[in-house]
Amino acid sequence: MKALKWSSVGLGVGLVLMLSLLLLGKPATEVIGVDGKSLGTLLADLKDQKVNVRIHAASALGDSVRHCIASRSVPALAEALQDQSEKVRCTAAESLGWIGPKAKDAMPALIAALKDHDAHVRTAATEALIRITSDGQR
Image (cartoon, rainbow, N blue to C red; front, side, top):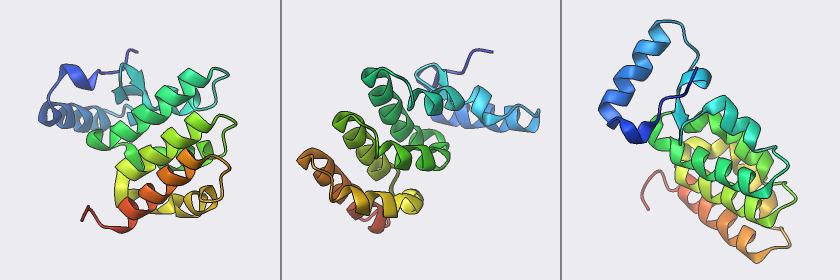
């Protein structure tokens, strides 16, 4: 089954479609997607061998906050903070920040990322912690 592309439907229409599909018994991880990929595919992409695939997945999962699936992305993004690529770690931290207060479960991983050897990762982790703890005030 091909995932829905959020860019092709408005948010209101998308939410109605999502609720309809859930009522029909289709798991959101199979149907709700960003950039044409399902949530399950994006979560799997965080473990792909290619750095660019992992970076794209981390970014798309952060963007998914607009599509009501971001909170399901938090554990995978928290784990991606330990990726071997500093770009993936940085993008994961930024995505957690975009999710905001719903990413509070990732705070321990973000606090650990404050000690990352890469300055960009430390900065992204700091900004993410500020956004998560600000309750949308930022």
